[in-house]
Amino acid sequence: MPVSIKHETGPLTLKLSVPYVRSSGVAAAGGDRRVATTNQTQSGMGDMTASAFYNVYSDAKTKSGVDLGVKAKFATADSAKTLLTTGENDYSLQADLWRGFGDTTLFGSLGWTKKGDTSTTDFRNPWYGSIGFSNKLSDANSWGASYDYRQKVTTNGDPVSELSMFMVHKYSKAMKVQGYVVTGFSDASPDLGVGATFSYSF
Picture (cartoon, rainbow, N blue to C red):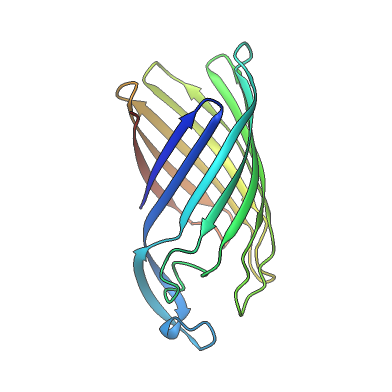
């Protein structure tokens, strides 16, 4: 359950997000990654993420644009809770692009992450990307879908591969809500997920 704040000034967009996480799974007993693992449930504040994106190209006539940016995940969660954090920082470079066709907008992204290695795991540095569309149904409602993929981060792991669909309703220029459903095609993605986000601008 993340709480995010975003600030836009001209072509620059800054965003900061801090989640509250509850996770069940196999974790290192006592938080020590060097000892045997056990089934546990852990909860608490997760890692903080921050990003900065700059709009390098924008064309109002074709409703197209390109943003370039950096993202960072800072290991601010309790390092003893191994289901919530790796205890290391991750850094990413990303490009976002979009193009409008009437009431439909196509969008995509491509990025690369430098993963922070732990004392027991040498993570791979994966490429990731997404492609999708959104369609405006009315002034207040729109819907869309996207496919996301990320290379596996461990030798014996799986890549992220998942499809999501979303619906957005604008109550006003300042307030909107978005609901989504997601399904995965690998062991690194959820079998099924649902969620909602609420946004207010001021």
